[in-house]
Length: 346
View 1 (tube, one colour):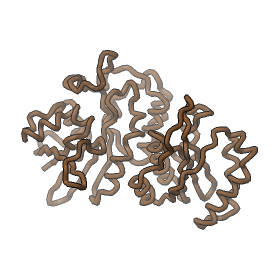
View 2: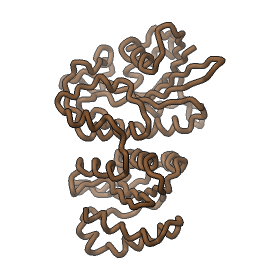
View 3: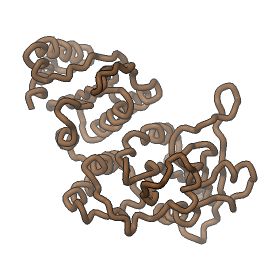
């Protein structure tokens, strides 16, 4: 028996699968995109057409017992139980309009689902991504749920350039042993170099740092990675999607290094247009995920200095002292603290 469980009120999955109607009418014949999405997923996970499938659509409840208006995590679960074994597969969905923010959006939305997956007690479990392709059109209203009635298609025949940030997202997935179910449908004809790059995980923290750095403007870096033979220290902005990106980068760093991984959260209160915005730390549940992965996280938000030259010339001594104190507190060799200065001269 295979049990497919879908959330009732997730915004994206409601648009794709019509989950509210399925739940309220107790009628899984109302499920949309069963053939072009769900069957593709089941086949990609190794299930076959002879397997008996049960569809469950479940609501999420708040602590006060009321049904949640929006369920966290753009994912479904597929579970198979038998006398021999039990297995569960999490399937996360990429964003709706892939040719606009396509699949780089994995980085922004994936941490919520991954956190729930990581806490799952099943011994046999996997985390997967399904790249949702919606036919691109300037005429499509993103808020009109009816466009999903017939617009979810295969990537086959959709010509697009897989850019550096999307490739970065795919490499992060591979580094964390996350399977991309319909990866083979992507058209790489406009960027063969990225096709080669996306085939492999990051093999070192330096490779991840270098790939990330080549995509950002010099005056708008969202993260810094500092490393030596024993430790990796990540400084990451926490505003908006930057906070989700640094979560995945820290998790990936931990997966590819034997040393300690530290994460400092950086304030970023000024937008490019000069408007102030609130500096908010990474949420407690995401910090709990990182700590459970063995990453040393610091709750304090540190100030961000956008001018690297000023940091090197005027504040290097203070920065090195900060790193020295960090290393002393967490048991690393203090002499390794002063490599912090070098990263800002790269």
